[in-house]
Length: 275
Image 1 (tube, rainbow, N blue to C red):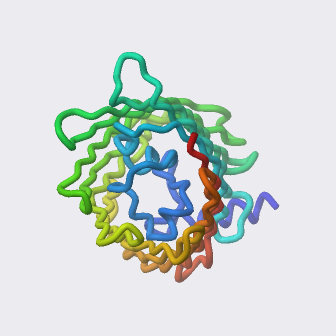
Image 2 (cartoon, rainbow, N blue to C red; image 1 turned 45 degrees about the horizontal axis):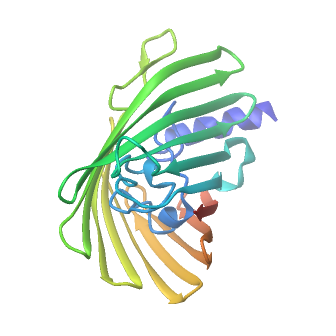
Image 3 (cartoon, rainbow, N blue to C red; image 1 turned 180 degrees about the horizontal axis):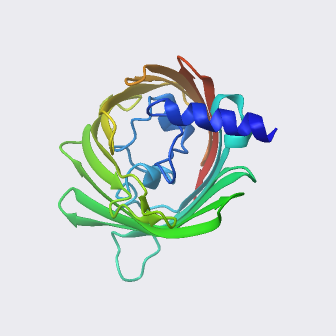
């Protein structure tokens, strides 16, 4: 089992833009991943802060969510996510704060992220947010190592149908371990367009440190009051994704499948509630 795990870890590190180096940006939302991972300009989701720390600013409801991601059928690399967001801030009626958590890996290699987020309306439609927290890595060889990561984001509306967003994760490139290794930064910039209340189209440019930029794009259409269908793609490498969202009052469940040309299929499963 250990040999198999190490072999898979080596393969994943050799393939660009997949689940690779320490403390890289990870994505929890099945809704967004079904649309190619293009989430930087979306709003009103508890998982939005994983794509843009500003995404919850000026929202009027509390929300929470849990998520599970299984990459390429390998449970040794699965991820669990949880998030709780609130707008009940006595000092800022346009502000939102929250706490989020992520666990990735197995007993041989494990990463845990725990961070706090604060977002607010700055001026007009412009919103800004920051998240910061502890990144912890635990390996069978080196034991536990921790560092502090900082993320920033901005989001604005050009009209009632167009949002623009940008974010950067691991802005401070935190040092990890004793060898001076730095966690890589990842930047996103993109837009969300709603030509109608039942359709959303997204396009995002992602730039990971020391890697080529890649395009993420996709869309969502509401086919029934309780059902949304989604599809998307990415470049570098080329992946194709699809999924569905099921809505029951304030509760929503989502599933996403993403096909990678060399590694196979990844899957995401998400539950969220607004209250």
